[in-house]
Length: 330
Image (cartoon, rainbow, N blue to C red):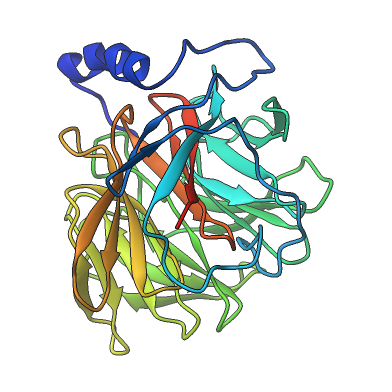
C-alpha cells in the first residue's frame, strides 16, 4: 500500500539514511551504494557488498545455498541496492537474481549481481506483488486496477489473468491488491483482495477464483506453508493471522501495519511493518509468540520481503529506495 508520509517522517528520511550508509547514487542504471553496518538480533557487524548467488529455484521463491539446520541467531546487514528506483515487492528469477516491482514508476526490474538495475517491464498500473512460476511466467499484482496480470517468459506483453471483485481507490486503506503468494500444496496463487478484505485462491490460468476467507480490514500480504496453511498481513487491521480450515482466522504475530510476510522454515514468521513508529523487520516464533526485531535503523517504509535457502532475508524499502540483505551468521 502506498501511504502519504507526514512531513516529520519525510524530514527524517535523510538523517536515517545518512546514519546507516553512504550517499545514494542516481541515474537510469543504478549501482548500489556502500554496505550498511547495523544491528540485527542484537549484533553489529560489517560486510562487503554481496549479491544473490545465481541458482535455479525449485519453487517460485526458493534460491541460494542449502538451508541451515537451525534458525539463525544473528545476521549481517548489507545494502544491495540504493538508487533512483523505488523497490516494493520482491521475488527471485530463475537464475536467483532479485526482481522488484516499483509502484511509483510502474515497472518491474531485475537487480543484477554487479548492483545495476535492468527494467524488464514498463507501463504497469501500480505493480506490487510478484510470483515467478516454475515455467518462468511472472505474475504481477496491479494495485491501481485491482488486477492480476502475467508475463510469459521472454515476453513484454501483459496477459490479464483476473480482475478481482474489489473496487480500489487511492484513499489509504482502500487501495487495490498488493502482495500475492504461491501455494505449493495446491499449485495455485493466494491473492488477498484488499478492498473487500477477502482472501482468494486463483488458478494459474486465471479461470478459477475461490474465496477461502474474509473479514480482514485491508489484507496486503500473504505466505503459505508446505501444508497449505495461509498467513495474512492485515495492514490496516493490524497483526498477522493464520487462516483456519473453516475460513476463520487466528492471530499469530503482532504488527502495527504489516505489509509483507514470509516463513523461515524454522517455525518463525518474518514481517515487514510500515508503521511510522515501527518501520521494522521482525521475526515471531509461531509456537511461543516471542518477537525479535531484526532490522529497523535506516528503514522508512519496509515493504517487500523474500528469503533464500540459506536463510538470508531480503527487504525492500520504497521510500528509502534501498534493498537490504540480512545474512545469517550463526
